Image 1 (cartoon, rainbow, N blue to C red):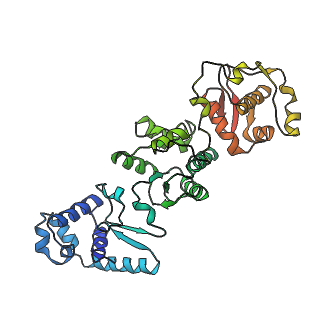
Image 2 (image 1 turned 90 degrees about the vertical axis):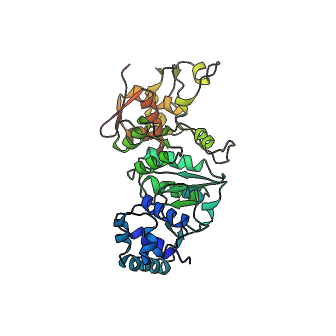
Image 3 (image 1 turned 135 degrees about the vertical axis):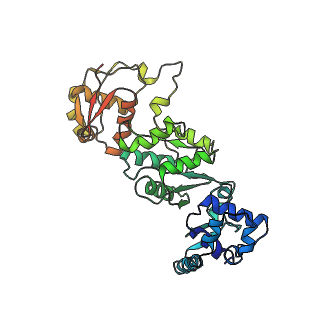
Length: 353
């Protein structure tokens, strides 16, 4: 254990001394080659740092070292490892931050943190995650399976735990770091890190954070897996890569007509289940607009609304033989395309043309 750890921990316990001030004090000690022990033992050495007298008084409190000793004892008892800023194990990408903590605590396999050639993907979001959000995170993380990447999130319910579990399922290492969504995004901007946002519906409470980041140019709208992969420098396709998000809104039209545009304008509602066939027999001869490049599932959803203008999501799930997580992304896409309305009480209706 490094001799400076006790004093770095004590410095972190000092009241009214934040991370930036603590870093400035530490860098001043290094420049003047003053042992950190002198901060707590030799006032004359501290004076040479031209440090505010109020900090000298704070660091003269003997209870700081007592707190630091108890902290180290707790870590030893609970198999928690301590890495100080002066250690060669301290993450290189974190050392560049002006408010990097002087001490890190961790449990688990630490080997990934200092592999400079590997990428890190941080995932943050609401604790009240929607089925659409859960599916989107699982698809994003799952598509990166096989790439040299570590997934980082915040150990909270909702988006965080979904990201951790998706990483483990995909064979990717994952780290849990305590933090907050909007604060994390703001810090990332300050550190010149690239930030993506994937919001839900405009009027959903859970989507306010993402819309705020996009509106204030603090994040880029994530529209496809390829966009995410390219930002990480992964240009090849992995075996487990999932389809693009919002594929219908991101598809660039070819000069030739799509298969759907070439089809007859009258479509029959099709389903693999006999129950759905019976329920949708009345959909025959109902027209679906061919102005937009809808997926087959989206065409089926629109045909369902032609038969009944307003439906609960459970009705749609039963009619289409789909789960809610499977259906919600398609409903959101159709809402973004201006085809349907989302109503209170999990009701959906087709927009009047």
